[in-house]
Image (cartoon, rainbow, N blue to C red):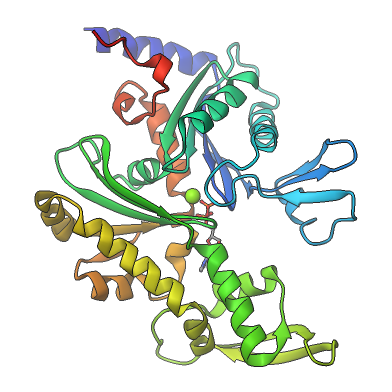
Amino acid sequence: MRKHIKKYVDKAYQLLSNDIGIDLGTANTLVYMRGQGIIINEPSVVAINNKTGQVVAVGIQAKSMLGRTPAHISAVRPLVGGVISDFEVTEEMISYLIRKAEAGSKKLLGPRVVVGVPSGITNVETRAVRDATRNNGAREVHIVEEPMAAAIGIRLPVQEPVGNMVIDIGGGTTDIAVISLGGIVRSKSLKIAGDRLNEDIISYIRGEFKILIGEKTAESIKIAIGSVVPGLSPMEASIRGRDLITGLPREVIITDSDIREAIAQSVDNLIEATKEVLETTPPEIVADIMHRGVYLVGGGALIKGLGNLLTESVKIPVHVAEDPLTAVARGTGIILEDLSKYDEVLIRNEDELPPTK
Ligand code: ADP
Ligand code: MG
């Protein structure tokens, strides 16, 4: 009966406010608006004037400044490393997103907001996100761990008594999580993800070709020809960087096998971490996962051949989710559509828990 009433209240709120879901990723931030889908998809970058402390730009505009800023402006990625390294900057990011999402809105009430945060976030950090969101006009704030949101986004049956497993390979972190009955049963977060692969490529090219390339160049080669198993035909890319000996620009051709060698160690670490999580997962749940498979999400899921290599290495089918970059945002959207159904998957701060008897 209470559920019934809650449903009507929900419907009323839906008419009165623009509810949104936010994926605060280390590389990309997405906003989902109820009834509309993904309306914002921008890099998680904030440019700050060091003299005044003021925010100069956020998102796409700030990213274009990375590596090109004059001395008094710095462009930072507040979430890099998977933890919220800079509360104030994170708050600016949240403020920008809510303002942009709600611009021109004629709704009576402030939005209800579901925020996806990196798994393993501390209580203090959760509270900071909650406060920052509330301070920016949110009427209600609901927090969910990103791997949980991703699993919901790709429509895994997270609330049923079956084991589900997702690996979210983002920019700063990879989150591996086993989920059953609405909760995270086992998880591991490691700092080996897209950024690390870019660094691997930079140091390999410096070592092998004596050329220095920037992060953006490394990332675009990774996306163009990065793979973890040889394809049918070899791939090549030409890159330009600074010759470490002459100091002048130079161009070289590199191949997919160069990139494979560059990222091999990191890929190995990912495989090992996956095995470790499986080894500590209860056997019944492992049996479910063997049957249902593991799902890869996040931008790193798109590295060519990763699903196949993991399948071979852990002896469990590993699938790359459809549209892996938007899984978390879509999950926050699904939660928004039916908050009472997903109550159990949300993170609670201690002061919100019912008093213990
Ligand atoms: P986050 O959730 O941490 O913001 P994302 O899920 O948005 O991260 O993924 C960003 C990462 O995915 C970046 O490191 C980017 O280089 C990488 N990425 C995006 N597309 C591809 C691709 N096609 N191949 C390999 N890596 C990719
Ligand atoms: Mg993410």
